[in-house]
Image 1 (cartoon, rainbow, N blue to C red):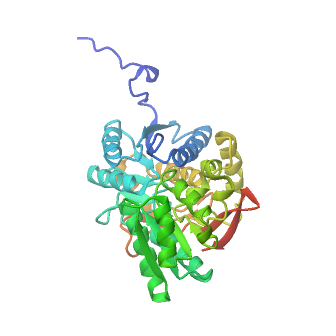
Image 2 (cartoon, helix red, strand yellow):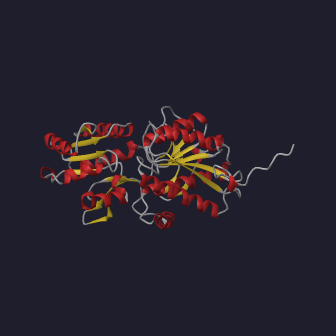
Image 3 (cartoon, helix red, strand yellow):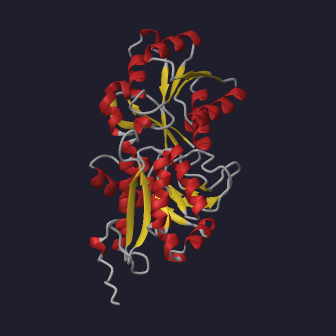
Length: 373
């Protein structure tokens, strides 16, 4: 009996081709996901893939990015990992939200599917140590301790945190508390499940806090909290902070204008980009139509690592996972190598460059570097 040939790539329902090397990409592209962050991660991933293919692909085979929108939903991400595994991807890349990446990492570990996490920083990305997962973003504890030291050096010892309920925000509050307490700092936690922005202002006055950190989602409730604090004359000297990086993206400046300036946050870039970083930055700006965030560079570096691994070790998933400790790739922000720092359950680049920056109040479109680490 004659078996009809498989349809060509263009006719496949999933849009994939048997001749390509497939990499799954997890990114938040719709609400309630942080859409700007997802767009920047994806821009970096796509630029990396384009450059790999322009250079001949992997052993002559083109790389194909199979993109799935997580929408900041852990269950949706886990289901996407299952789907991508069935589509035959060599590895999964991406994701911005830590709780989503955690769900994806757990599923990838269970399936024996390599996952290179681009941007999520939660220390405990998996419950148990795994050989299948690696990460180019720094662990939360590394960056947030640098941020805590910045606050102390700026004279802040009574620090309030407006926190949404989630593993990520709770982890961040715990890191700050543990790091600040031995140095004379106090962390006052404000549970945003029961507080309005006006009530947050009252609590800051009551607790005599000199700084308020926004451990909350963007734009809600971060933007209304900023507006309320900025308009409260009792809080004229109160410093706002956003260690998770909300002010990095253009939407922050659009929604808040001058109110969004002078709010220190973390980003993962060197003080000066080298030749590769500068070239990639120019290409990312053209692709995005705006200045690329550090998140876009993380996406590009993810593909740089995976392309190097695939060229050296092929597409066998077990060999890819076994290659993490041998990675030595020049990325946009430095040389990427993976190790197992204490307390980190995945293969980790230790460490990408860390900056504390803010938007210049005199020119909110310009960033000021306040500390490096």
